[in-house]
Image (cartoon, rainbow, N blue to C red; front, top):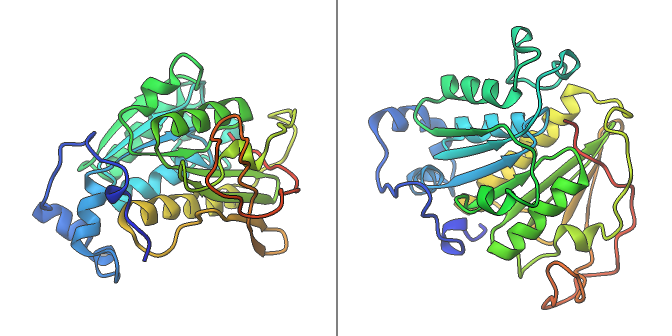
Length: 280
């Protein structure tokens, strides 16, 4: 079992609760049967605030599974309006919402799924000016943004504020996933010091691919919050879903990283691989 988030990062953004309501006991009964989670883990979920950036096919689906798992508060951050070609993967959306800000529909859908949690919707893109304020009330972040500019801003903010981040991205049928804990693991800049240029409309995306990665990202967050299982600390899970091939890699922890250095140790040789980018 891993160390739960609450033992390393204070969770003070949701009013602390030491008990579950009868409705919550009924709602989460099946998952509380899991060895290593139980009532104590469920209370840790209830007392956690998670920030999800990029609430699209990846972030929206991850938020869905955090919501139904009972994470006490979700902060959903995504600018822009829903487009019809988003609907093949953005499972919180409906066709009648095309042309409207997608983050508010995500808030509505998740509230209907689980009215026992709090959901804040922020209709903005991540910027230099807002990232620290967005992250400050959160205990953990899920990086599901559609470009590296937003990803790098969240990564740097998590390092500054000493908060863990689940990093998930995809491109076509390929994806990667890792969990970043400042001071313990390589950060995103260690993994990818050179950023790609790309066209956000220039690659295909299948909803089942973003959904697969999103489920794994939500699971990483749940594991880190509760201590259930072993999260991907210092490991990068790569996926070729066209071939159902999965591999774990040990990325380089750069001792001179401009974001998280000086690092306490080096894990292995630098990583060389194609860089997926999350779908929006």
